[in-house]
Length: 318
Image: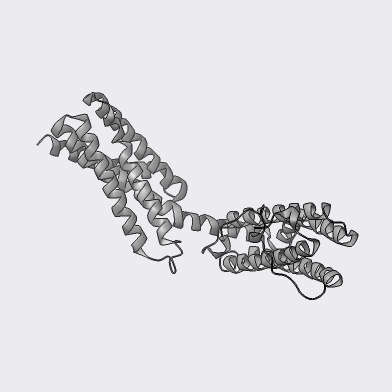
């Protein structure tokens, strides 16, 4: 990789042209990724891409005046100092907040590059253009805001916010909640059956840990293999599977951890308290994201949890 200070003015202009071309294509990809669910925001990124093409044209005109037609191939990854970013534009479906933050980071880095390059340039015309482009990149956030005002009316913003919320619920909340419910409820029976059968904290902890991890692996695979998200809009199956598996394991391990305490009855009462917290958290998530009344959600979850809880105790005392 070349160091920034070792770049010639020809290489700086060539790199600037490449950057603008890449940025315009990234914005086009953002627009395509958002178009189905967020058409108004997609138009914003179409306009941003067009602005970057204009910057490239100004740079290339000056380059030809100074150095001719040959444009050396030099890219960001060839120069030390540029931040290597994940190709977010390849992810489907795209999230609005992630895209906007990514775009803001792009503009900030590009503006710094132009300003540093201008400071090191001895050519007046090159320096002037680079400073102008730095200011343009600084104002791209304002440009996006103006484009948003033109394209995103209040009704459109509300509609896109609702779409973003539905996608968040589908891709993260639902698989996570399903995992948390399964881990918190299904592992109660084996845990408390082992507890009252052995009256041994360590043995109970091992049974609870095994139940939690086994349930996590099972739920993770079940969620990942349920559908590929192409029709349901539920997102990447791997991400859903990881979310569901981790939340399942977390729900099961939560009430197993108190059995690290050697005193059996202290551990049991503390574990029962953790179960109450878990069931309350599940009820709150259902109320917050699933449009279920809190008392109704709490009743449904607690009744199921209590039945499984006493089933474990009965089997453990058999």
